[in-house]
Image 1 (cartoon, rainbow, N blue to C red):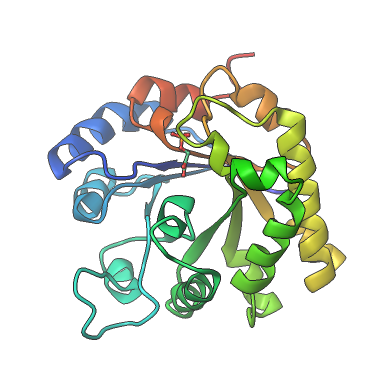
Image 2 (tube, rainbow, N blue to C red):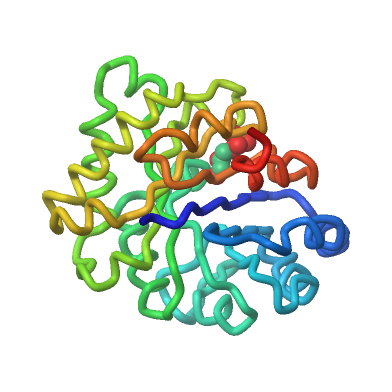
Length: 252
Ligand code: 13P
C-alpha cells in the first residue's frame, strides 16, 4: 500500500509572517490526518516560522532546493546540512522552474545524492515541455531525466525518493493533464523504475502528479491507480483550497 502524499510547493510566496498566519489557520483542520502524508514547502526564509508554528504536528516541512555540497564558497546557496538542522524532512529537487534556469540532470543527480546522504527525503521532479509532448518525445525525455537523475542511487535509498511528474505545460497554466494522461505517464515511470531496479521497487515507489492541481480535479486524479499524491503550487497558497485538496477523500 502506497501512502498518499500531498505536498504544497509555495515557490517564492509567503514571508515568515504570512507563513505563521497560514499555518495557524490551517493546522487545526488537519489534526486527524491518517494514512496520508502532508508536506509544506515554504521559501527558505520562511522555513523556521513553519517549523516553529507546526510544533509537534504530523505535517512535515520541505525545502524547494538544496546544494550538492554541504558547505563551501557558494554565494546564495543553502545546503542539506543546514536544512536538516532546522527541521526540514523533504527537499524538492529538479523542479522545472529550476531546470529552466540552467539546472541540468547531472547537477540534479548530485543534489539528490547529497540530500539522501544527509538523511533527508527527496521529491524528484521530472516532466516534459509542450514542444516535447507535441513531438511525441514525452517518454524519451522522462527516461533521460529519470536515468540520469537516479544514476548511482542504490536500491536501498529509493524508499526515500518520491517522484513528482510535472508536465511543464500544465504548471501554472490552468491546463491539467487529464487523469488518464497523467496515469499513463506514471505507469511509464514505474516501468523505468522496474527496469532500473526491480518489480518490487516499481510497485513501491510513490509518484505524485503536479500541474494545476485544484479542489475541482483532485478527486479524479487521486482515483487513478498510479497517482499516489500531488505536488500543488498555486492552490496550496490558500488555506481553503489546500484543505479541500488534502481532504479529497472526505467530500465525496
Ligand atoms: P501549479 O499547481 O501552480 O500549477 O504549480 C505546480 C507546481 O509547479 C508544483 O511544484
